[in-house]
Image 1 (tube, helix red, strand yellow):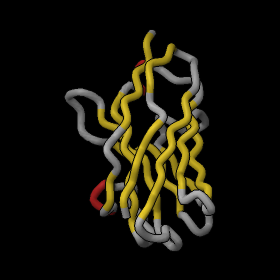
Image 2 (cartoon, helix red, strand yellow):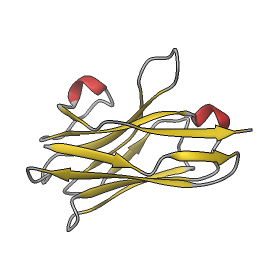
Image 3 (spheres, one colour):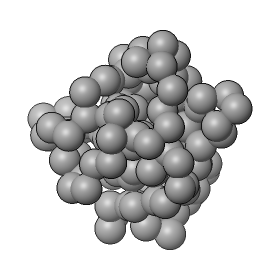
Image 4 (tube, one colour):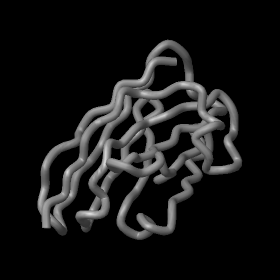
Length: 123
């Protein structure tokens, strides 16, 4: 599956952004879509994931209650709504997909990756 991420940008503390990840090439039914991020000098970290068929979400503690992951089956698109953004949210955000249920929020569980979209939050 090919993934195309978009929606990043430069915002101020407290602002919102919505990232989108369009999947093409195969159905995501039964699979998992995830969002990860990587800040300069840091390792890639899990942000959120959603089980495509059930819509069940999971979040990293650092974004819980601020970020919401969702998906549109008809559009084969996953979204990450990011509210109350903080400077520490600054990173390149990547979407990733796996054709099965990924139990652990680990990047190694995902086979397909988008190109990344930059999110910068100024203080």
